Image 1 (cartoon, rainbow, N blue to C red):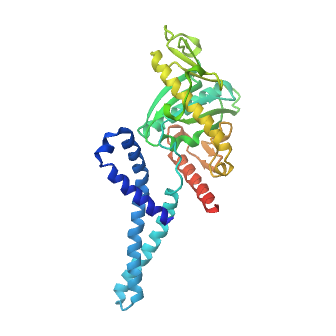
Image 2: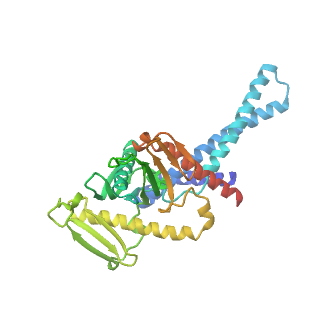
Image 3: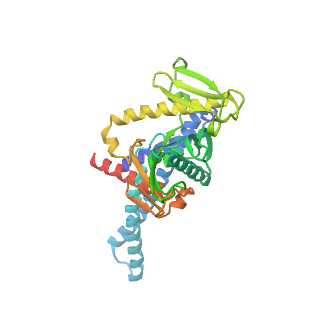
Length: 358
């Protein structure tokens, strides 16, 4: 591990010099890529410097204790220094192991979130709207930007399906564990006998990808235009600004009708299509690497039931890590950090265990 840290520090210093080179500064792409690498290496190098400072202090105290001849009061101070830095080295070592875990290359990307009502009809659509609101409030709390791409609403205030983008630092790294089936248990407002109904909503979190990352042949696309409509089919736009793109090789269909401009709708729809094709390719690659599958908290499979929201008891349970919180209202108001942090910690623990087995 320490050989790897030395090489990491060397690379960090090398990038630091390059970032001051006028030739690099004038090359936007190279400068951007080096800045990204520099940003990723910074926490590792800073933590390693902390370790080296603690190690130096530990070794100095150790030498003084071994040499002997210290007065009692001073010896106690040195012993304290020895114990404190020994503990600090052990603690920092564990942090460094986590920092050195291979990063998900998508972690820094913006995301496209797709929410669809599943089993439960209108009740599922109403809960899909609750989840849409939850993610928007979470994005707002983190200073991220959320923007609707396409929405199919119901007359009773529910959402059959919605796709929206979230732009912000580390959006995918924190939201990627949200993919899967979210189950809700509650008494619907329309239920007169007070019976608890169970409904499901499917969430997919896709990393937003650039043109260069996935190539799409224009000949493979069928692009249709139509009039945007609101809940119940009422026309809200007299021009055919809405866009439907069909990717013929895969049969994927993407729609966007949120913007008044046909060009903007097409641009948003292409973003979603690229992200879906990218995700499909990743799923194929992941399926071929069984060991990688084991070292993950959930596979990101949309058919996997990941969480239950129980309204009568105000309880939320994440089934992947056995986490139960009695903070349902807080979570639905966007307080997701406690759950996400627990999922990230569990994922890191699995990856550390997998690394130790290798």
